[in-house]
Length: 325
Image 1 (cartoon, one colour):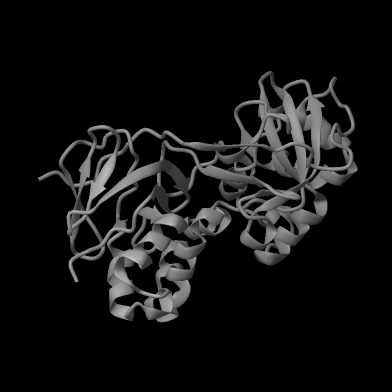
Image 2 (cartoon, rainbow, N blue to C red; image 1 turned 30 degrees about the horizontal axis):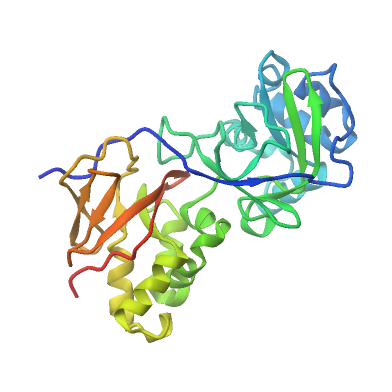
């Protein structure tokens, strides 16, 4: 029997929604004769970012030819980040940690605001879960443009967009974007609000804390969407999360988690057995698209793959998996 310990290649699905204007000055000040690093250095709001790039050894990267997108935190954002994390100043931040945080603000292609879509993109940062697959960033536009759920969720909001540079474009943001955990990404994407409620419904279970940390990581989470949970409640006759017995909810949630493996999607094979944290397994089927057959013979489609987090990876599914209870 095959177990799900192999690494897969990333294939992120995007929702299509034009980002549009991000501020009252959508074009921003033109710096089109300067590199991204020089643009930051010349902008009074971004002097701490420029110093951070120098300390992390990234000034030369963002001065060289290329086509980058940088979400640039303001001085106020950086100072708030330092204070929140107990750093006396920028020099107190370990270089390796600072470098990954900064890379988490950089995309490898130039994306102006008019071309960005709501959904997942890849940054240049790596968390501890994978040495090869870079972290995902979730971008959403409503009345404002939020990254990873905004400042309240360890992300940021774009305040000034489309500052041109010779090697890409800069979008100024109001927060330092932390390396996202599984819980960070679940909260950021409003298609997972019921899952977040389920994870936090019984604090004694420790699910939210576990999937926010590194103990037992990396994790692979097959995450049911809100629609999947609504169908599950109709199917089972429960009136809501509060009506589900605690032991049933806990076992069901564990049945969606694989501990100790950062499982990417491309090496899924037909008939593959997946052992879960509920001490029960389900089966992967690849004919006609990746699907999961649970312990009760019910089939769920994998609809979004490879959302890379710092402590694991998420794949979205369209039906709640039901273990033997």
